[in-house]
Length: 250
Image (cartoon, rainbow, N blue to C red; front, side):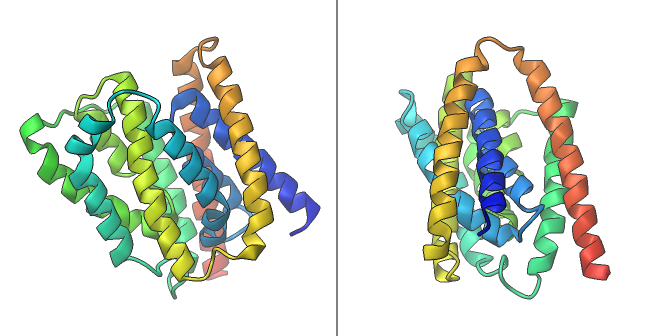
């Protein structure tokens, strides 16, 4: 990779890490969305996957709720792993060019849901069977785009977790999903020595950004930051989907 591309990777992961530090999520979503401007989503995911796993593992063990989270979310996690396995190869198969279109559409959908503040509740007795279905859909989408926020994120918000428990739950869930994706990438031969240097740069940049994001979290207005973050996701998603469609049909 050229020096300019490595610099772009560092900047993208620095921003993604900052958003994760400030909001508790968003590293793969932002990083893959930005990197997909210059490379296929499969290549972007291969660079992002290790920083995503490490930061999510760190987030998993920050908090006292791990046992209860696993007890409540195991159907969601199992469903996600099964969905990723069922759709293995989608990132590199004949329909791979459409992955960027799907990724762009998902970023727009995710941002619109966040901006609308659409709220619904899922009763405790229905968590497990709904979680299994949501996990399966999330896994299929994740295997196509590398992004796991739709529809898992609305589900996690709907089951009524407290703020700190939700942040830890995001770490547990995303760790499971990214490990399953890493297996897909390894099987497809995408995790190779060629990704070692950009992956190391991505790791350092993401942790730097995450610590900066955590440091400024208490000093900023989180709602204002969240609003502009979601608006930027809409613009990025529209650009990705539009440019990918032009390439496919041009």
